[in-house]
Image (cartoon, rainbow, N blue to C red):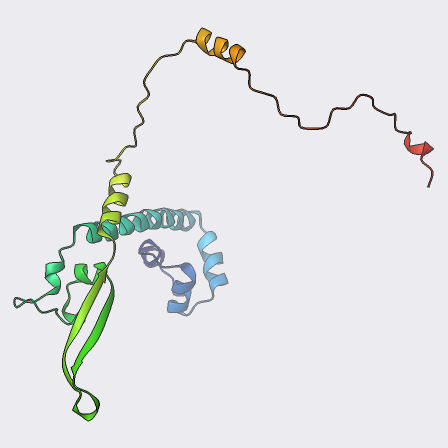
Length: 188
């Protein structure tokens, strides 16, 4: 079996799954599992890789939010103000675009109809929502509720005496309870 624990762990840390690794290496998943858990050091290294992958995912999500929050849409246009072709967009611009809508503009009718231009609209991911999520993650925003006034325990007790909360009737009131026969007395 051609398995290298360092190679496997690097694959996992970068978001790869163990079954994908097995497919890449053309090795049966069950063989890799047996090999992995047959050695305590390999098992421990794999567990550390899984933990690092979790941290990698968190950091990747935060990086995506940061890209959306701080993006400058001007990078999607050339010096003349024309939208660049998609393949020329910098990575940070491509990440902030949710959709591109293209509408062709025509003049004339029938055989005289001629394309005179097109309108392109970019739909971007929500910048404000990204800023909000990043701010919450960094604990920049705190919801604060201010309470004013003072009540003493005596005032609360007196208020409950003066204005008692009615008790809800959970079951109908029963005046008497009939005795039920013992199980051996039940006749079928």
